[in-house]
Length: 81
Image (cartoon, rainbow, N blue to C red; front, side, top):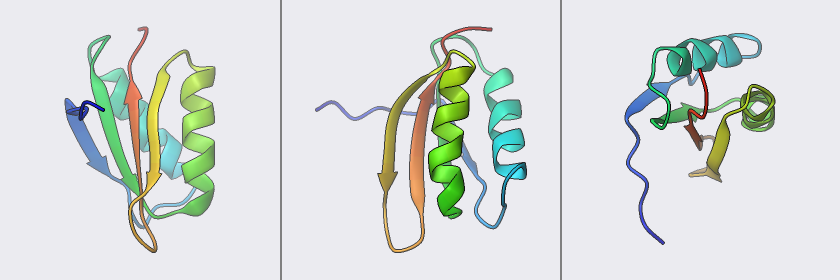
C-alpha cells in the first residue's frame, strides 16, 4: 500500500473534546481541497469522534491507527470547502 504523505500535521496531544475537534476543524479549513491533514492525538474519545465529525462535514477519513500505547494518528483528505 502506498504511503500517504500529509500536507499538514497537527499534534493535539493533551487536549480533550471539544478542543480536539475545534483544532482539527480549523486546520482543515485552512487547507486546499484534496490536501491531507495528519492529526496526532492521545484522547481515546477523539480517535472516534474526529473521524465521524470529519465525515459528517464531507471529508474523507483515510486512516485511523493506534501507533503506540497512548497515541493515534488520523489522516483526513479535505473533500470540499
